[in-house]
Image (cartoon, rainbow, N blue to C red; front, side, top):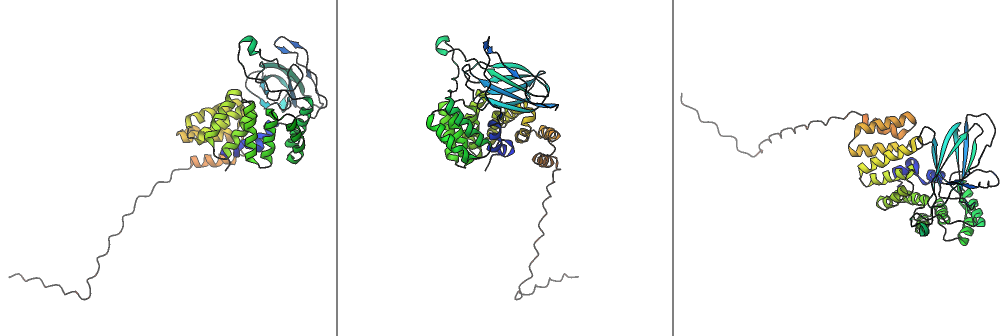
Length: 373
């Protein structure tokens, strides 16, 4: 049986649609700019036409050699603070749609590279932002310790991976198989190729194989966040929360601002009756994801109810229904919490047993002696 959080919004179908986010169909890859200071010069290019109020932002992330970075976590923040959207770069790219024109900050975090923050002004035509990350200092020369960088794919293998990725996004695993097999033949030890093979296996309902490929990806690159999340989601579907918790702690540590990792961890902790920690992780997931994480509030309400905090659970469900009036699950849970308690009826005393008549052959009762007058 699928875990409740998977059924709500983190099942492989939705989770895959997020982590395998649609990429731009634009043509040639822009070349990154020259390096200055802590970051290279980032190019911002307007694209598209039209006077729509909402636009799109394409973010592309590369290393100094021009190779795309697959593990980069990209966050868009309004100037006043908060979080507008978040995505993991696939083939070094992520696209955000429906953005209101204005000024934003784009924050990029990737293991093995320095954190980048870049301002961008988005008008009605949209924008394209290219960021080149600078690697962290070599631990051998600086004495510092840091996470390893994702191995770089050769250009030919990268093309095969992109072709397989496009087919998986389109829901065509049969089309993805050939380029994926060729990519695996050329680079069997690359964590991202093993991750994609796991996604392919899950799409063909070969879950043991999917788990095996995600485990292999993590044995090569222990902090590969997509593999950690997909594997954890699969374990939760099989009610193996105890096994999922360590992977989710690793995902939270590797990507502390990824709300989906906190949401899945909240589900696993709730399953294990760790209600205080489940409430904390659900709070953090909603704090990071905002409207993107609206569905997590149902999980939050369940954890609060298990904790004994009925009043706050009702308040959380009311907030959920304010933002998503069509959430039938939240409606049902709120109605159940508001329903008046049915009084327990008092026990009814059993009727006294009737006195049985005397047997037919019983002697008649003796007459009472007469008292003298």
